[in-house]
Length: 150
Image 1 (tube, rainbow, N blue to C red):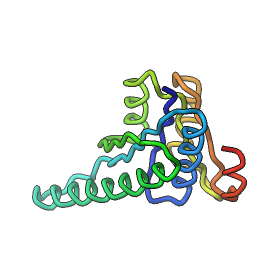
Image 2: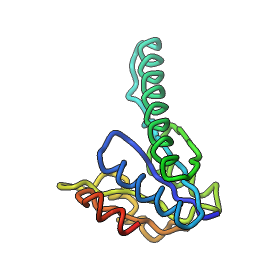
Image 3: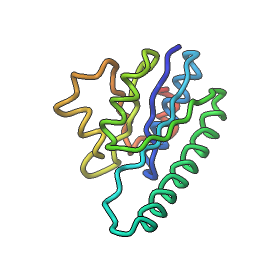
């Protein structure tokens, strides 16, 4: 099955990438993998504080994934939800490497300014090393135009 991998976070552009992927999956009989990444935390000297920070980050990631899964279901597509910890680019590469069904990594660019770190990473030096295409959704695209394209 053709599956689109979408990395979600709090940015408005990640919801555009999710919408594009869900609509493409609905039209192609595919699926969506929703990936929330918990980046490594800076070391805190007190273990209890570190554990609290990590628990809060995981809880926030779970909320993001649940909200995203609801949005995907509105398109008639069931999503596979993932929450992983680690360096974002390494986690994405690991997830893609673990599944032959991933047809594309769908990312959205920022509406203005510098691209996000994943966009910069996967369109820069490592652009040619993935086993699937990278689809970029412009962060400033109008939703009606996005819907027409997907």
